[in-house]
Image (cartoon, rainbow, N blue to C red; front, side, top):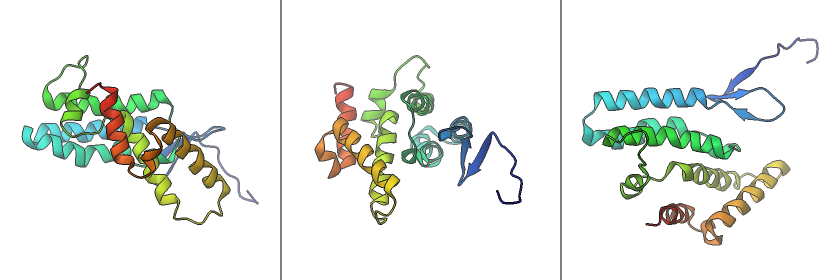
Amino acid sequence: MGKVNLDWVTSFKYLGILFDSGSTIKVDLNRRKRKFYTACNGVLSHCSSAQQMSLSGLNCLPLLSYCLGYFYLSVSKVKDLAVCCNDCFGRIFGFKCCESVKELQLFGGELLSEYLCDLQKFKFITSASKIPDKILVLYKFQNTVLSELCCKYGDACVLDMKRAVWTYSAKSLNV
């Protein structure tokens, strides 16, 4: 770049997010998962059982969900993040690793982890829509993601995305 030599790096950190170098944008989720598990272990080992649920949601979940809606994540990566949340939730209630905690999460008022990413995407789109449409790439991203969300959750999701995600989540469990 100019007369300055730039070193090639395999990853870089920007705004607390670790990116892997390559031809496409890749987000390294392993560091986030380690931080999440560290925070969960701290909450679960130092708090009473009555406090664990609320503190894990307040202190641990943001470590995992930070900027989730800004990037495309494959289905396997979204499920990988869901496993982290399910592990923490299962430990709070004494579930074994092979037991599902989805019904317990839903009835406990926690959004299923698989749908958290969609809610984050919608929050990003609504906040990005306040920016003037001078950025064509962002405009295309907004339209593509919004149409995907509408196909999945129905056209009413634009009015109340949180309710649409909760309803869809409950239907997925046949509740």
